[in-house]
Length: 311
Ligand SMILES: Cc1cc2nc3c(=O)[nH]c(=O)nc-3n(C[C@H](O)[C@H](O)[C@H](O)COP(=O)(O)OP(=O)(O)OC[C@H]3O[C@@H](n4cnc5c(N)ncnc54)[C@H](O)[C@@H]3O)c2cc1C
Image 1 (tube, rainbow, N blue to C red):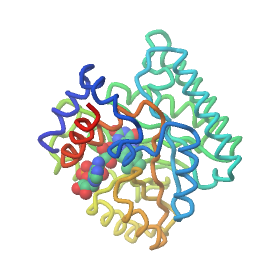
Image 2: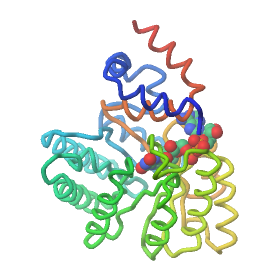
Image 3: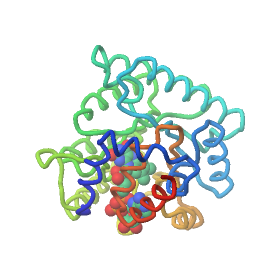
């Protein structure tokens, strides 16, 4: 992992840093390079643009760790509004939604797990009515068991619901085995949180090796792997595993984040691969932006310049 990753993630938790960064308008270059806008309209327009380029989308209404039930309800309403807007524009064949359970109540002190499950059900129902599906994002390791338990419940009524597993966690290869069954959509990513040594690999090489082991399990299995990475080596390995296990294009997909390696997204789509772009939108872009900067400290100079020009 980059030497700067942990310090940036720790700094991101400071209220003072948050106040300073949050004065940036969403239109500032550093924000728009990762987030198309704050409104439903901006998300729908970005989805339409991706569809024109032959790319699918998964949309994330930004926000996480809410301790306020009304805020959780507002997030559910934002998703239902988004889903009906996507359906009205005829975009749901190529677009689904990604949901963070902590944004819809998982972290609430009383009954958080139950509230998040009920809220997720409402979003799954709205997604099905719109002709699409939901993927549950994965957050820090303290939420993994609760998130997988909610996934199991949701899949009883909405088997199309997707899961995310993070290769940096020691447990993930076993979780991949458990989820590699027919009809199971699993997004494999490396993992974006600051996790302790007791549960997660710390060195990039170990994370990459784990990613490859997990990928093998998913590609050899009977589910639908969603390969979420910008790493050229992982993309290459995924393609050779697809040949090794006789998977045809469309029986798995590549996923990348909005604004990261857009030429590669288009190259893969032009080569016949299914490619889905994760599109985050909304006013709560701070935590998301900080995780992206932590992965790419080269962007810090650009970031500092954006801040100085605003103050
Ligand atoms: C579709 C999708 C969904 C995700 N969902 C989750 C989730 O639910 N939970 C979770 O913990 N994490 C999630 N992530 C984030 C993921 O865990 C990683 O933090 C992130 O993708 C970076 O890892 P990487 O595989 O791209 O490899 P890295 O080793 O970080 O990067 C490989 C290469 O990609 C390029 N690159 C990477 N990041 C950037 C950047 N910010 N700007 C420019 N170039 C860059 C560089 O060329 C770099 O060398 C998701 C990622 C994707 C793509």
